[in-house]
Length: 139
Image 1: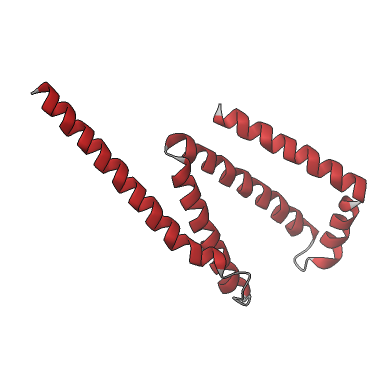
Image 2 (image 1 turned 180 degrees about the horizontal axis):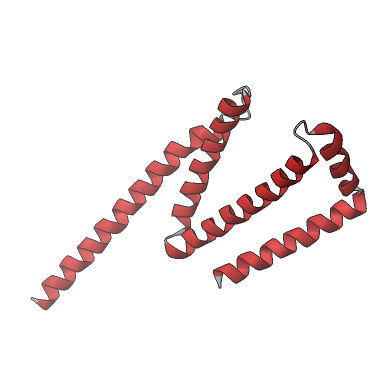
């Protein structure tokens, strides 16, 4: 069910984006950008586009699978941490400036992890307390 839902969302987003790009002339912009704006050539440009699309689909599917197998809180914490890694990668690899727009994602990851850890401990404590209560009833 999760995979089917992800497939439906991906196909809907692809149809919506393709319609918008066709109506606005975005495909001619892509051709111009691949020929003139990408310094490694048109073939590398298109491989980069396809690779990014596949990587995003894998990321979305992995997040959906994580939510399915664990909790949505775990998926949110991992997505927030991945966002922080993405910002750090842009700063390190592309020598981007770490300014005001890039500061919130890395600074929000540690508090989210602490909230997740606290809720996980509360859940485990509640599980142990209910087991102890059950053992008292049985004994």
